[in-house]
Length: 235
Ligand code: APR
Image 1 (tube, rainbow, N blue to C red):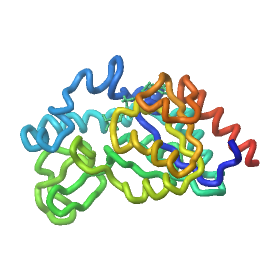
Image 2: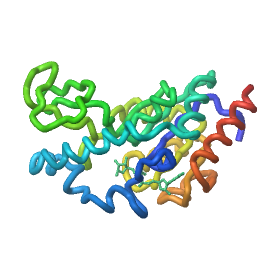
Image 3: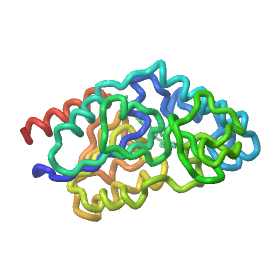
Image 4: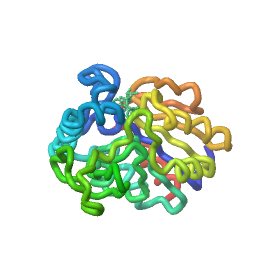
């Protein structure tokens, strides 16, 4: 693989697993204990706002008990040192990338630290906890909801993400099962535009055969080694 100039990195729940945040699928995953239909759809929010808000309150409260791990820190090191174009796109709603120091970062599925007014659309720092009917700091209406992209809703920043992926020469996917679109389709877009594609994951994902190369193992080990090699070669 020639030395890339522009890189797009996609992360999923697997990068935060070693920090103690449950992934979604697989043993002990969030979707084992909760039905998506009960906590992660606009219909669930309309039907039972108290349960949905409680679910995300618990996940937000848990952020205080976890820390960024070596994989988050390695990506922040890359962000600080990489002279070319770089974009980190995360499906995660935790704040571990920011706390590790990543700056060129987009949350495509929302963020636990943010609240969204269902009426005026303004986003603001989320109170903790965030009970239903919390007034919006901008329009004052009791309409704040968790700023999480629910199933059936459009992910955030898709234009910027697709433009970056179409223009990059290296696309790297870390800790994601490739089960959820449009994130799972980004590798195809990258390959279609001639980018090299690399997957770093604990086990083969639904999209492994779409990547030029797949390395299996723990994110903390794989990501640190990849970043060290890249920065060493580029040094
Ligand atoms: N290191 C590397 N990879 C890991 C690790 C680890 N320590 N632990 C788990 N993984 C891998 C698993 O093998 C799996 O392929 O991370 C992946 C996690 O997959 P999911 O639980 O499906 O999470 P993700 O792909 O991020 O889910 C995508 O689905 O539920 C929705 O909106 C939610 O953003 C989420 C989206």
